[in-house]
Amino acid sequence: MKTDQLQDRLLTLRFEMQRAFGLPGLLGALLIGAAAIVGASTPSVHPGTHEMLEMQDPARVARAANAHHVAGERSAAADAVALDTLPGLFPGFTQSANDIAVILAQARDSNLTLGSAEYQVTTEAGAPFTRYQVLLPVKDQYSAIRRFLAAVLNNVPNAALQAIHVERPAVDGNILDARVRFELIYRTAQP
View (tube, rainbow, N blue to C red):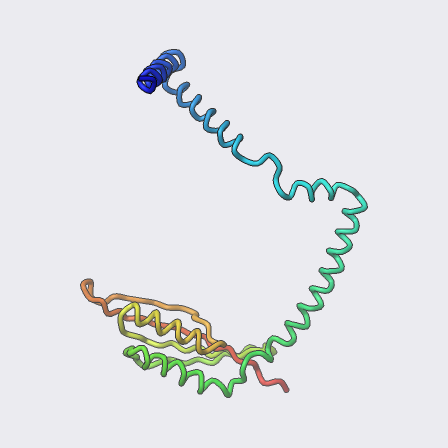
């Protein structure tokens, strides 16, 4: 019986508030109540607040800035060394025939129908890298093409998927025509 009385009182309260404030006022009151509940449920102090308050000490701010500056100098020096050693991590261009063989083997393992491929070598003057682009026309189902792409990228570490263009020749067919462009990156021979 108490639940029926409570429901009646809440219904009466709703009608009285709607009559007094109108529908927009009633919705506004509900939004204010929801905001109050959300505000009460959030923690009052953000976890990083204590660190921010400690940083207001000028001496600590200066020490932190100096430490950050020194770390930035070390980081820049480490980046320069890493950048100088980066080309050495890539294979030489003599590896390109093996990489092409791996790509074709992955296509064969995925049972893909391959068309005639196009190849293009690009070397910029003074650049530490040589780029070898391979454009492969592929014909098969989406899952087989996707499996082929993943296998190539997993087995040829210096390969990057540059572009893929997929067409469905027949609306009701599940065989796709795709053109896949890989870019193989090699280090340029140093004089």
